Image 1 (cartoon, one colour):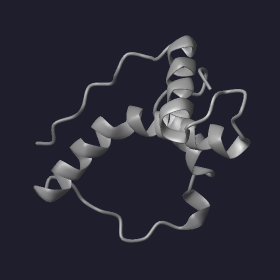
Image 2: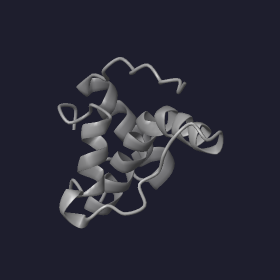
Image 3: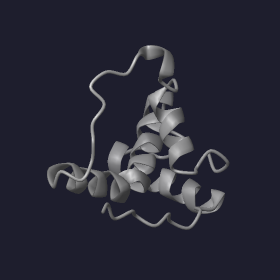
Length: 97
């Protein structure tokens, strides 16, 4: 039987904004005033990745132990679009971003 990761508590807009600013400072090395659109994108993607990591690691564990099935082919018509937007939706962060 597959163990499911419990959903995390929703992140507030203020907490997500703080995380974004910290990523700009410590990952991109810029202040919010100096940040380019690309800097903000990378900082946001890093923040979203952090929110998705527990679930991803559990999935990897399940796959290694043979507790999952894999899809061999998925047509492009069924993909949800841009990766960051999809990740924000999956992490429950669309309202905060």
